[in-house]
Length: 71
Image 1 (cartoon, one colour):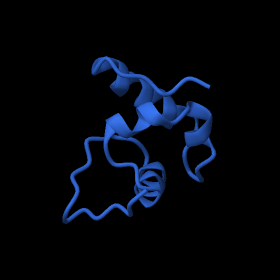
Image 2: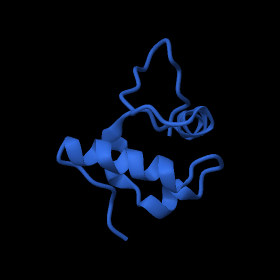
Image 3: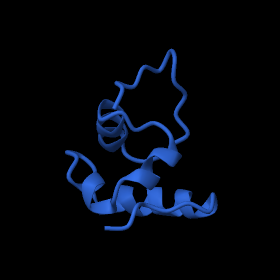
Protein backbone atom coordinates (compact mmCIF):
# COMPACT_ATOMS: atom_id res chain seq x y z
CA UNK A 1 0.00 0.00 0.00
CA UNK A 2 1.06 3.56 -0.57
CA UNK A 3 2.23 5.67 2.33
CA UNK A 4 -0.41 8.14 3.48
CA UNK A 5 0.45 11.61 2.36
CA UNK A 6 -2.03 14.11 3.80
CA UNK A 7 -1.14 16.67 1.15
CA UNK A 8 -2.19 14.41 -1.74
CA UNK A 9 -4.65 11.96 -0.18
CA UNK A 10 -7.75 12.74 1.82
CA UNK A 11 -8.86 10.39 4.53
CA UNK A 12 -12.50 9.51 5.04
CA UNK A 13 -11.85 7.37 8.12
CA UNK A 14 -14.07 7.92 11.15
CA UNK A 15 -12.68 9.51 14.28
CA UNK A 16 -10.67 6.86 16.12
CA UNK A 17 -7.67 7.06 18.43
CA UNK A 18 -4.59 8.90 17.20
CA UNK A 19 -2.35 5.81 17.45
CA UNK A 20 -4.84 3.77 15.41
CA UNK A 21 -5.26 6.52 12.82
CA UNK A 22 -1.51 7.00 12.54
CA UNK A 23 -0.77 3.28 12.16
CA UNK A 24 -3.57 2.77 9.65
CA UNK A 25 -2.18 5.67 7.62
CA UNK A 26 1.35 4.27 7.82
CA UNK A 27 0.00 0.96 6.53
CA UNK A 28 -1.63 2.83 3.64
CA UNK A 29 -5.25 2.82 4.81
CA UNK A 30 -6.97 6.15 4.38
CA UNK A 31 -10.25 5.30 2.62
CA UNK A 32 -13.06 3.15 4.01
CA UNK A 33 -13.35 1.26 0.73
CA UNK A 34 -9.85 -0.15 1.30
CA UNK A 35 -11.13 -2.17 4.25
CA UNK A 36 -13.38 -4.24 2.00
CA UNK A 37 -10.24 -6.04 0.80
CA UNK A 38 -8.93 -7.02 4.25
CA UNK A 39 -10.36 -8.91 7.20
CA UNK A 40 -10.89 -7.56 10.70
CA UNK A 41 -8.13 -9.94 11.84
CA UNK A 42 -5.70 -8.35 9.37
CA UNK A 43 -6.41 -4.89 10.75
CA UNK A 44 -6.15 -6.05 14.35
CA UNK A 45 -2.58 -7.15 13.63
CA UNK A 46 -1.55 -3.52 13.19
CA UNK A 47 0.07 -1.98 16.24
CA UNK A 48 -2.23 0.50 17.98
CA UNK A 49 -5.39 -0.82 16.33
CA UNK A 50 -7.63 -2.62 18.79
CA UNK A 51 -11.18 -3.97 19.00
CA UNK A 52 -12.67 -0.53 19.61
CA UNK A 53 -11.11 0.92 16.44
CA UNK A 54 -12.33 -2.08 14.43
CA UNK A 55 -15.83 -1.66 15.88
CA UNK A 56 -15.87 2.02 14.85
CA UNK A 57 -14.58 1.13 11.38
CA UNK A 58 -17.25 -1.58 11.10
CA UNK A 59 -19.99 0.91 11.97
CA UNK A 60 -18.69 3.40 9.38
CA UNK A 61 -18.49 0.66 6.75
CA UNK A 62 -22.06 -0.48 7.46
CA UNK A 63 -23.33 3.09 7.08
CA UNK A 64 -22.02 2.96 3.50
CA UNK A 65 -23.28 -0.55 2.82
CA UNK A 66 -19.75 -1.98 3.01
CA UNK A 67 -18.02 -4.55 5.21
CA UNK A 68 -14.62 -6.05 5.92
CA UNK A 69 -13.59 -8.94 3.69
CA UNK A 70 -14.63 -12.37 4.87
CA UNK A 71 -12.01 -14.88 5.98
